[in-house]
Length: 125
Figure 1 (cartoon, helix red, strand yellow):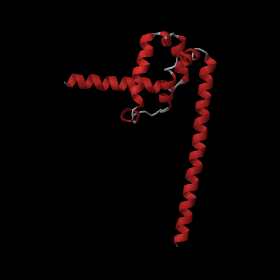
Figure 2 (tube, helix red, strand yellow):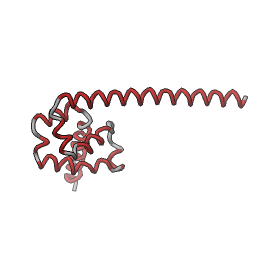
Figure 3 (spheres, one colour):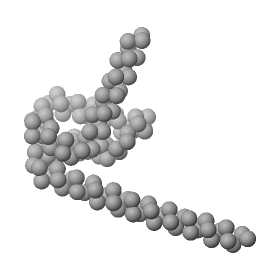
Figure 4 (cartoon, helix red, strand yellow):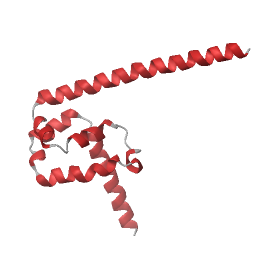
């Protein structure tokens, strides 16, 4: 029983690490160039990994964009496009732009909230 728990824990950790690697477009390009996406067993494994989208598992992810990539990897056309380094570069740039937009938007929301709290504090006095 103890070896089953250890094995399950190790499997969980390995799959968690692999799924998060899918957030890296350069890694996806690496896999595509080496033919992994042409291997039916590997494609089936990617389909199996969709269970990470369930909240009980997704809560362990540090890079949630990996779930979007995992979803896109279910499509043959996307897998074929990843062989092109320009495709990986485009995805990488889009992720950076998304992160920058999110960061700026979050900062503005935090500033607005701080200003609102400051106004509430001065109006209470």
